[in-house]
Structure formats: structure tokens, C-alpha cells
Image (cartoon, rainbow, N blue to C red; front, top):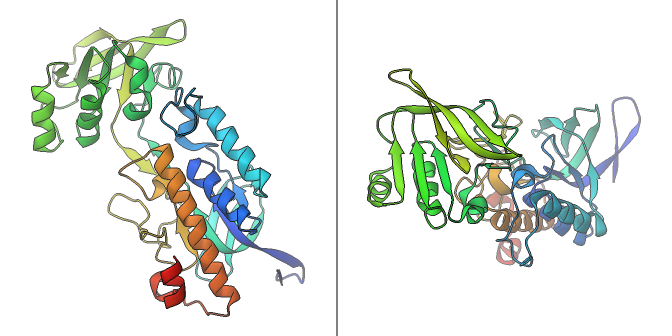
Amino acid sequence: MTTTNGHGDTQKIENVIVVGSGPAGFTAGLYAARANLSPLLITGNEYGGQVSITYDIENYPGFPESLSGPELVEKFKAQAEKFGTRVEFDYVTELVLDRHPFLVRTESGAEYQTRALILCTGARPRYLEVPGEKEFTGKGVSYCATCDGFFFRGKDVIVVGGGDSAAEEALFLTRYASRVRILHRRDKFRASKILQDRVFANAKIEVIWNTVVTEIFGENGTVTGVKTRNTVTGEAGELKTDGVFIFIGHIPNNDLFHGKLDLDEDGYLITDRKMRTNVPGVFAAGEIQDKVFKQVATSVGQGCAAAMSATRFLEELEAGHAIDLRTDPREFMTPRAAVMA
């Protein structure tokens, strides 16, 4: 399908544009391609998402021999392209969602029109921003205990943070590590009472209060320790460790969506069970709307669901149903489509 722009030129209207190149994005592209929608996937600046900085992945079904994060991303890409997903290495700078087809503008100056959008922009860890953090990411510095804890069997690790995530991940790490030290900048946790009780009751966990990491250092390409500062006395210190797990929060990549799509109190896109946002024809999958599970496997499932919902949305358009961009997308679905979805 084509349309005419303001200069009299014709422009193709895409069926589906997927924004983001993590597990959710490539899965959405795969399923949309297999539905003969010829989707366009725009990668964004963080190609592969958070999985691309993960150690060996051993908990993704179908790969018992394990593989690295970048290897898994390339397999996702190859499979999506095999069925017709077109991948553009570009960055979306603007979305126009108050008209249909939607308009997508990118950093390279490209403009696209699309009948459906699947947003998979993900979230990023909140970084300490100290020397050595970037250098040793994937080499002893991690932001996911579930992903990487297994590689620290019998080792000494440090957890940085004081909220629910830090407490939960520290407890998880005790399954593998011989010792887990939690460094928190204050003298009490923000974590829930039940999690605090579990932390204090676990013999493998030691809590170091009023302490921040000022530098991460290592030898031969792996972490060997951290430099610290006491937030009360200012005293500098040093701790030897095999790994540093940082849990001081995540930041959803939502800059494109403010004032255009509904976000929750933490800035994540709000979707229903079918991955639909509050704008009909706009879907979301992966960590941009999932602040609970944050796993490759769950992101893949959400990408699949978003693509299936987008396919049904386009079927409704083909059947001649009009769109009111001001309504809840669930009101747009006909009883037949709702039963099938």
C-alpha cells in the first residue's frame, strides 16, 4: 500500500514496524514475518538489548550447551530475516501516534508510515558510573543474578543496592556463591520487611552499611575487587571479590512515549494481556512493559503475543473496521476477534 506525501511523492505504508532489537523485538519480527506481513525492524542504538552484555546463557530452552548473549542475538536476527523481517540499523527519534497510519522518524532522517507498531525498546540498568564498571561488564560485573549467578559457584560476590531487587538477587546468589556481601549507601534497607528478614537470616549474606563503590578493578580481564567509601566517615576502603552485581534500579527506555502512550508510575508502558497499549494498533513487548520477570524467555513470549495481536488488528483493518485512536483498544476488537485472540 502507498500514500502521497506533501510533495506529491508516493511512500510505501508498512504493515508492521518493530522498534527494538532484543529478544522481544526479533521474536515479534519473526512472527509478523511468518504471517506474511513483511515487517520492518529498526534496531535502536543498543543492538540486542541487555542480553547482548550477558555472560553465557544456559537457561534459554533449546540450547543446553549454552551460548553467549551476542551469539543468541545473532541467531534471533538470522531466523527473523530468514522469514522476511527487514532489519534497519537505525534509531527512532519520533513517533506520531495521533494519526493513522502512524509516522516513524529516525536518526538517519528516514520517515516511515505504518499501520501497526510493536514497541520493544526495553529498559537499561541504572549504572553506578564508576571507573571500571563499563570495562568489566560481562567480566565480573553483572546486572542479572538469574542470568549470571550460576557462573559464580563457590565464589565471593558483592551486591550493590538496598531495595527489593537487591535483596531478592542477593538471596538468589546464595544458591551458588560461597559468600554474598550487600553494600548499601544507607544504614537501612528500602526492601520490604519480609525480604529484609530473609536477608538477615541467611548465614551466607553479610551486610555492609553506609558504603558505596567508588571503583571496580581487576586483573587479566576479570574483576578482583572494589574500592569503597564510607558515606558517614568518608573513609576509603577496598574489598576483594570475584563479582559485582549491581541492583540500583532499571530505567525504561520510554523517551519516545511521554504524552503519547500510558505509562505506569515507574515509567513502563501499560499493556493488557494481549500486549495492547492504550492506542489501537500500538503494541509493546519485553522489558519496556515488563518490570517483573525480565528474562529472555518471557520477552520472547511477549514478542510472540504482540505480533499475533498485531496480525489480528490488521485483519480487522482489512475487514473494513474503522479505528478511533481515542478509544481503549479493547473496544476496537469485535466479538469474533476477541474470541480468537
